[in-house]
Image 1: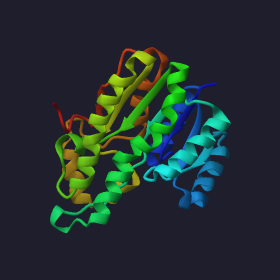
Image 2: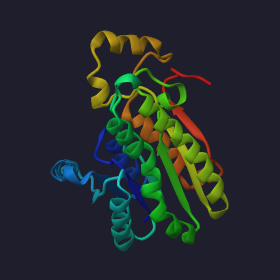
Image 3: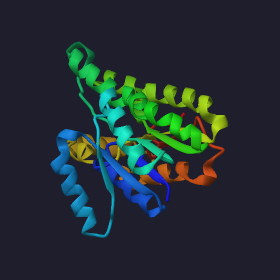
Image 4: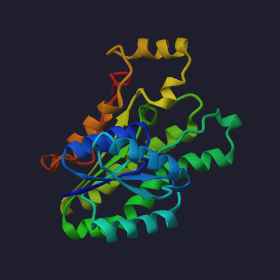
Length: 245
């Protein structure tokens, strides 16, 4: 059975991605922030009660040493991953005038540097097997920018560049690297948006609704399939048409 590592796997999007990959036949390993161990175990137990089995793997994606240790455990227990989904991310919103260095660095490290931290120690084993699928989760705000999100928009735009460069490096080795860019998705963060602002967002989306986590999971599933091997360095926008090139 092929293995799939999903960072931020116990969150809203992460859960949907884990469920879809498990239904696709992967053995799914859900990464979580070590400080949230109790929450992760509760997540695992809740899913186990409905006959969904996932492995848990702690690791701070913003910390290179933590990711090195996480990779060593992964390789010892499961061998080289067939799939890596870099889904973990945070926001620390503020206009640039009010944005602290701490919040700038936290978002850059978690949303962008994490790609290096997670992939680097796992890449050689994947190259040795001659097969792999890497999917990096970006955002519509990395494409168009967003007021109050210079840190987040910069990080998510960086995900696109990272993806295209790595895709070129590993294309001849059987590994594809692609990006999925969600728009507004029905997660806990979006649910906190005030009703009037939320309606304004919906009105701006051509399909007329906010997306569901499963919409993102479906795109990931498509890109990690064995028969998607001719798709690399690409980006799939899943945003209901709110931002069209």
